[in-house]
Image 1 (tube, rainbow, N blue to C red):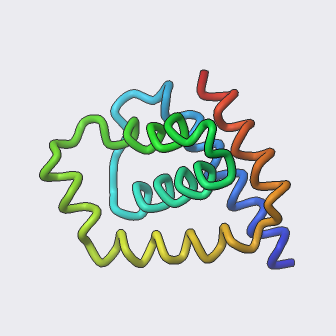
Image 2 (image 1 turned 120 degrees about the vertical axis):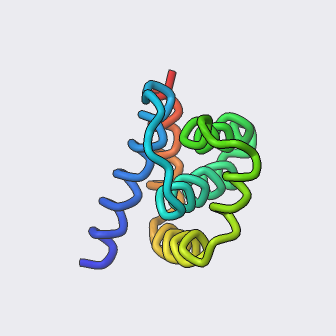
Image 3 (image 1 turned 90 degrees about the vertical axis):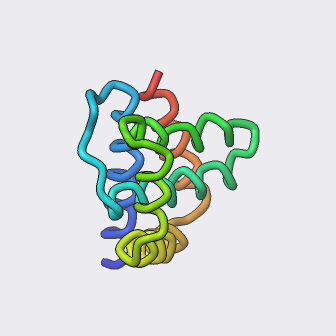
Length: 110
């Protein structure tokens, strides 16, 4: 049951990353930024050849923020808690499944 829930969460998060490329100025909060950056980090680790592309996706979410506002979000307790929770959840997904979801998110973001 936990594995199924984590797969669903992983897939949903990856789909959110893919949709960022087409989004118009989405609302940015510490939790959404932390989740996006956690997924991008895991995907970059799983597919080093595409790491730069994965790591660019969360920046689309924050594209309307100043450098100072982005730094403030990343330094918040909410960001830290959300990122820790996201990374913990993502570690439960088998690597083969995670790689497939990551590559699908890149394909969808084109």
